[in-house]
Image (tube, rainbow, N blue to C red; front, side, top):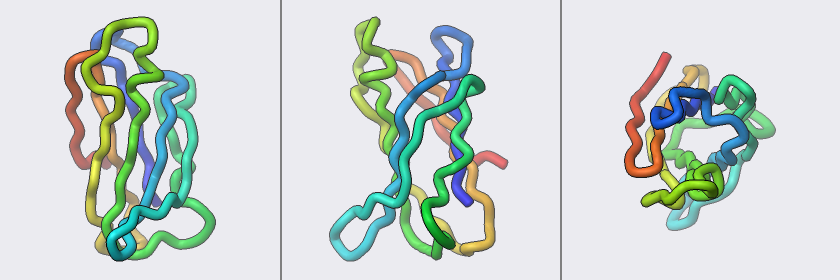
Length: 108
């Protein structure tokens, strides 16, 4: 299972309604697996797609440009690429975002 949580560090609030796309690396291409929007707590708990996630390299793309549409923003999107080694593990990838910076880490 792959989940995420986005917090807006500039506003000090969850990043509500941010679009997130999950893709898997296949050969030289990225194949879309799932997509969604963060909820009122900034969480997205439904990124596992239709079926079991296998080991591989995955990419989360966060649409920070649309989220920050009312303020000047340096990053139109944030991409986080990570490796899933075991299909049974839960991978949580939080994102801390502001108009001019971001931080991510492997969460629990």
